[in-house]
Amino acid sequence: MTDLNNFLYPRSRYQGRAKPENLVFNANLQEFSQHVSYICALETNGKLAPNEAVQQIRSLWHQLQQSQQQLGIH
Picture (spheres, helix red, strand yellow):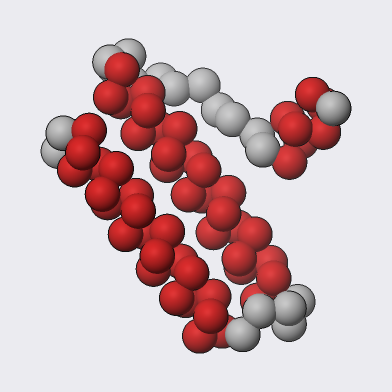
């Protein structure tokens, strides 16, 4: 199961300054990227309407921005 999780949800090492808020934001950013990739694949394959894909990506972007603000990252 671990190999499947690593395949489906790959994580890269954080190379920046290792402060807790940076690590949390990096994890959120990687999750955002993964979700956007899935949404794009669904839209490309006709499983998701273009306007729904855009709406979902906007929602994810808003969540990422809130995360950035809450963590105090500039």
